[in-house]
Image 1 (cartoon, one colour):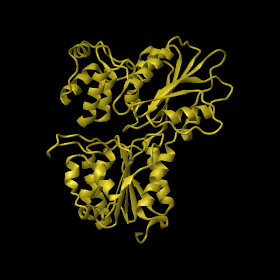
Image 2 (cartoon, one colour):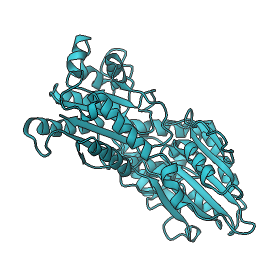
Image 3 (cartoon, one colour):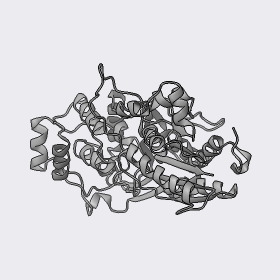
Image 4 (spheres, helix red, strand yellow):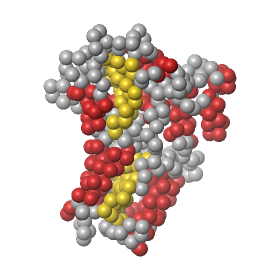
Amino acid sequence: MQHPGTPAGLPPPDFLLQLFRHAVWRAQPLHGMAQHLPAPPAGRGRTVVLGAGKAAGSMAQALEALWPPHAPLSGLVATRYGHVPPRPAGLAQRIEVVEAAHPVPDAAGLNAAERMLALAQGLDADDLVLCLISGGGSALLTLPAAGLTLADKQRINRALLDSGAAIGEMNCVRKHLSRIKGGRLAAACHPARVVTLAISDVPGDDPGVIASGPTVPDETTCADALDILARLRIDIPDTVRAALQAGTLETPKPGDARFAGHQVHLIATPQQSLQAAAEAARAAGVAAHILSDEIEGESREVGKVHAALARAVARHGQPFARPCVILSGGETTVTVRPQQQPGGAPGRGGRAGEFCLGLAQALQGQPGVWALAADTDGIDGVQNNAGARVAPDTLARAAALGLRIGDHLDRHDAYGYFEALGDLVITGPTHTNVNDFRVLLIL
């Protein structure tokens, strides 16, 4: 039902979805790539493309569309299964795109990483390497360090994902347990010139954290990785622990001569997408406020904080006046806890859905507040939804179906809760990734 004062004549859920689409549109690689492309190498120099991430397929297509048709271009990128965008009519394919598993790596990702290192061999100073990097590349570029098997990496990756660790901590460990992350890919390209074009999915937009920084020198250390593993109680083989203690798995550091002349350009960021959504809201006559593009923490707790802010606006007109939208981004976490109920099967859902559970529980049916949270890659966790919606009647409709929100939070089952309500946000893969998108509408 349409609420009085709904922006642009749209029902609140449709208006919020429209803002999400503006955010995703801004993050498409074609919009930010052209201004950062170098000129093709002169003479006999080659241009080799290497890369990985959830946006790697669309980044490759954008590069093919923008690169001079007469200039040679070849290479290989890896993206998530099902994330290769449809090819525009008339666009010739010059870059090979392979698919692999995310968030837990598989043999296809390992094979792609091996092939990329092989393509980096034999380059010279006349050659140019264009590296297309986006979020998800940590899992898609899998090349275990000596002493580790693919099964070891899969187990460690699952443990990191379930631990609630921040993305920087996870990627510190991943860098030191890899033969391609943490600057090693770019180092392997020496003496060729390397230009990295990246789409940021991390708080702070640190290129060393995006996809575990395969093309930039690494400031973290083996000791840092050991401390994180110890604190999170994640086991690794004794031989690998010894190698970390001895520093033999250390990553290339800032000042390494192999990175001289390299460039890194961010072609899309979370802040740019939040700004695009804010501009669309203002164009519809609604004030828009961006809290931050760097919010981290437990998803449900972040939801509670957003709920407290929305209730203050709805009840007291502070700190913002109604009507307004409140936007935020970043990368929250879901710490998977032991199941308390008989049978204890874990629920389905990701960060965006868990945020919505925490938000709905804390809003307590507050009138005049609607919300949408979604992952900008179109996939929340490993399900088929991008996220979920919350409305003033969410709790009441759920209660009528016999659903208890606390039970769903306990087993991390956001998908089951919002599926029953018809409030999942399903977009399919968006072919980009600037991480969490959250928007609250207060009327």
